[in-house]
Length: 264
Image 1 (spheres, rainbow, N blue to C red):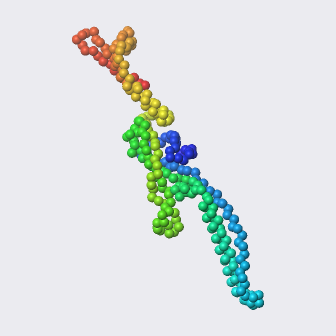
Image 2: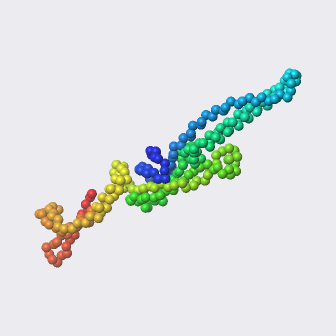
Image 3: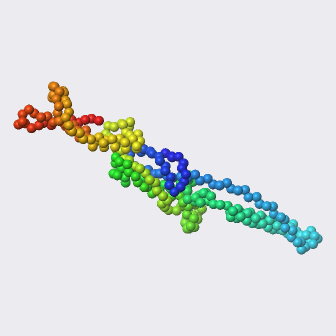
């Protein structure tokens, strides 16, 4: 699943909840990405190169008598000189533009992110948090590692000699704060019986704790069962267990106690 884009900063509340079904074990990854678009390449137009008139040391008569091979060599040298001057002017223009150009997000981050903008990844294993998150919310900090940074130190390697990209070893760049809740599915329960969200699950667990801690004691009227007529009996209620106390007429016999389980 993919969340919506947020503003990149030192901290950003994602606030996304998702449910994962666990069989025997569960491991998943969370990857952070950023939108990083390369800037437009400015068009640099080279100024026309002025033709350099070399002083002719030879007379027109000698030029006329020079061989075509020498004339071709002179034209080649003149063309090379013109190309060298054009390249020099282009390099000077690029250097001036670079000096006047302010660093952008692309200049600062393009060597730290992957082709799809990935820059951090966290690994979560349920076995490490199952006991603490069993039936109760657990907040944990999961470290994030950068696995896409380019190594620009110039270290020699076979891959770099062949022209490939050399990546740095993964290093920690931040953390993700997660709230985990592990709810085992009761035997015989259906999917529609399970909570639909973490807030609903926490609310139902709180209500169950309140019912579990419920205690009551006092008289309770009864008619039916072993009481053909209405009778008042002492009773006590602890959680979902209701206990009746029956006082017999003979003082030589002890009082009897009946228990009933109240279904929710």
